[in-house]
Every structure is written in structure tokens, then in C-alpha cells.
Image (tube, rainbow, N blue to C red; front, side, top):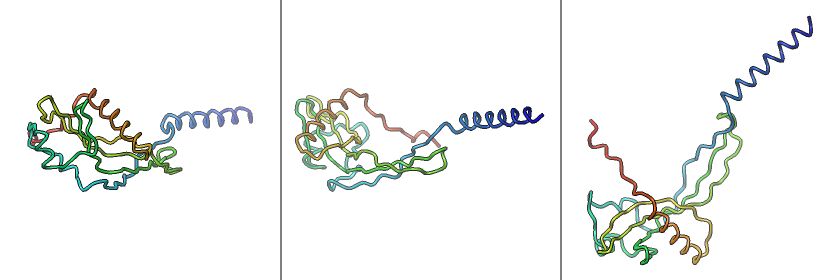
Length: 164
């Protein structure tokens, strides 16, 4: 009789553990709010132009100023806006906070692609990883980032004007 009760108890505990593993599969790592340290006086709003406008490079320089980096081979100008520092919260079983590790620092950069006639074709603000303070390595990293950005499809802004 005792053996049957012990077996049922083990089965009940095993079923409960299996249910817990299905419902709580592990840890969640939501990001905490990022802190932004401005690297220039420029803001995200400075890079908005009229819808479907393709300002000339001179128009952009007049409105925004000289870029931090310009890559003539790519026809891409880069403006550094903010340094971004972020942490993540590690929640065990989606409830219990167990750690808050630091993510790699990031850099918020506005990128402008020009065409053969020096008209802006694409303007986007990207967040890129930032691993080094070495100026030469950072310049090469920005070039590689701009080169990769050109291979990606343009981000189309979401238009809510048709909603009521």
C-alpha cells in the first residue's frame, strides 16, 4: 500500500514539473530603457524633410551642416547623434529578476544616401554597435556599416493618415 502512494506522489510531482517546464520555459530578457548621451546638437527631427522630397546635398548641408563622415565611393553621409547605453533585465521564470547585464554600447547615426546628381535618395537613423574608441577603427567601422546599409531595403515609414 505504501509503495502505491509513493509512486502516485512521484507521478504527481513529475507531471507538475513537466507542466512547469512547458509554461515557464526559462528566462526572459527584456531591455531596460536606454540612456542617450548626445554627441552633437543635432536631433532626429533635423533629418525630416517634406514627404517624397529629395533635397540636394547643398540643401542638406545648409540645414544640418557638415557630416561626421562622408564616403564618396558609397555616396553616403553619416551624422553621429547619440551614444546609447542599455541594460537588459534577466527574469527567471519571467518573474524573478536575477541579473541586469550591460549590452554593448551603441551609436545612433543618421545616414543619407545621395544619387549621381547629389540628391538624397534615402535618409535613415540607425543604431549600430560601438566596440572601440579608436578613431581609425571607428571610421572603418562606419564605412562597413554604411556599405551594409546600402544592401538593405529602405525602411518605409508607417503612414497612419488613412486611419480614423
